[in-house]
Length: 64
Picture (cartoon, one colour):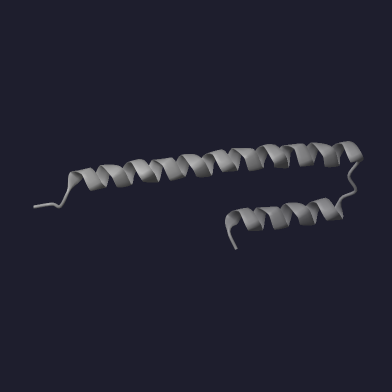
């Protein structure tokens, strides 16, 4: 289980145990959506970072 999986499990457990108003549920859904978008951006930036590092390493060539 990743940290995100654990966080999601713990969060959903708390939400199930607590009575939430429709407004609270919609706010949580909005926040979750924003979080997912930010995570996609982070993942993409990490992928770009790895590509840049790999390119830099390939340009170095073999060490003598």
